[in-house]
Amino acid sequence: MCKEKHEVMAAIDVGSNSLRMMIAQVTSEGEIIPLEDLYMPTYIGRDTFSFGRIQLESIHDTCETLKGFLKVMKDYKVNSYRAVSTSGIREAENREYVLDQIKTRTGLEVEVINNAQERFLMSKAIRNYMSSEMKFLDKGTLIVDIRSGGVEISVYDKGDLKLTEYLKIGSLRLKEILASLERRSLDFPGLMQEFIDSRIDFMKQILPKFNIKGFVGLGGELKTIIELSSKKKDNKLKPKIKKEELKNLYDRVYRLTTPQIIEEFKISSHQAEILVPSIILFNSFLEMTNANTIHAPMVSLRHGLLVDMVDDRFNTKGKKESYNDIIASVWHIGKKYSIDEVHSKFIEEISMSIFDQMRDIHVLGETEKLYLRVAAILHDIGKYVNHNKHDAHSYNIIRFQDIMALSDSELNIVANIARYHSDEIPDLSHDNYYVLDAREKIIVSKLVVILRIAEALDISHKQKIKKVEISRRSRQLYFDVWSDEDIMLEEWSFASNSDFFEEVMGYKPVIRRRG
Image (cartoon, rainbow, N blue to C red; front, side, top):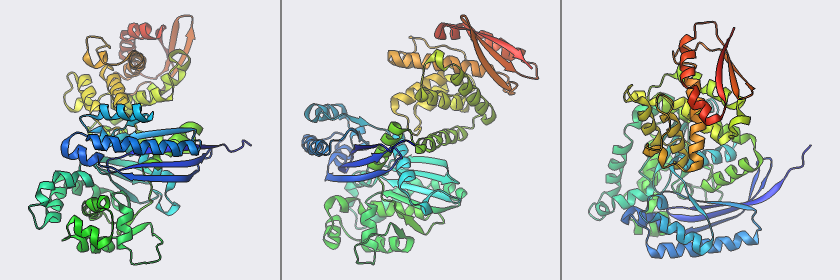
């Protein structure tokens, strides 16, 4: 039996409203034991959402705080760390200057993550930290993550991810967008409620279909909301808040200005600024469900970062669960654009089989396999726009999706794979291919030829091929296919793709019918 391994890791969240770092001891079994959790407020989000640029004072303060974090990391002898930034830096016009200043003055590499990556990390945190009674069991569960810049909602049913949406109505963003109205209105919360309703009204037709009985809340100073609503005075925080408790708290703060909230509840200005919008948002989504309680696992992006590092370092079982969430979210996108599910499923399975059987030829890994799988599912998504040149439309649609866990550059790779699944092959005269770096061009081309062969084997969309086995002899690669039907069309399409395949892979593909 292998001995359990231990390491010390750090996760840093350069957020819109605060800078946070968690240092934890992690084990090869996936256990995460927090050792230190540091917090410092920041005006990064306020600057970005108000002025479009992060002000110099905020940059200086951020660098000084991160220097302090580094000293603590050295004290704990941290083996590895990951630092990420979200909407506050991501949307700033001067973000490259800010990131360069941080790297130059602190040595820290801060990664800008998109909404889909943030969602992925939070889903990992939830799966890892939630107690058993709050797991996604046999009831529909809505997860509402209120961030400074936006709100991420996810719906799970029977353990599977069914729906994800990102809405740019974060608690701090709302305050900054509507700041001019706050000074002119005696009913600012009412105006804020109207504005929020106008942005989430479409969800009233979607969420009831899932019969949601479980509600999980994240972010939005939910800890503060629970503390203020709790009638208990024993300082023991309960990880949930009932619907009526939330409503009562809303009634208490409804007519109060931010300074009055600070005075009334003895909380900081950072907490007070986002209290009312957070309460309104939580209440609005809660009203769309059959749930009567918001469960608060009190996990954060930092937890998700640590879980992700542990999964990568030790290849834990949670890694497979997260992978399944990614694929489920991709199928949700495909269904939204009315893809041919039977054909896409067939192409997905054939592509995966070819990829696995050719590992010693293409020498790509599991990350690249994920790119191919996503592209295989969504390759025909462009037909939603127009059947003519649908491959180009597929590229455009995929490029602007939020696909869970994929960075912007990875999304571009997937979009390019789908772009070339049909008639055209990658060409340096195409801007979308030209902008890729040398390594990305090779990845795209290798995965494209696999996808094109898979597509050729179902050119009729009738799923005639039952099995594919690949063998190698000299410079030829034999594709033995089993079918009980006439596959002349498939053989013709396969042959028409053989030259490009040979150019990329170095082996001439030969199709042989069996059965």
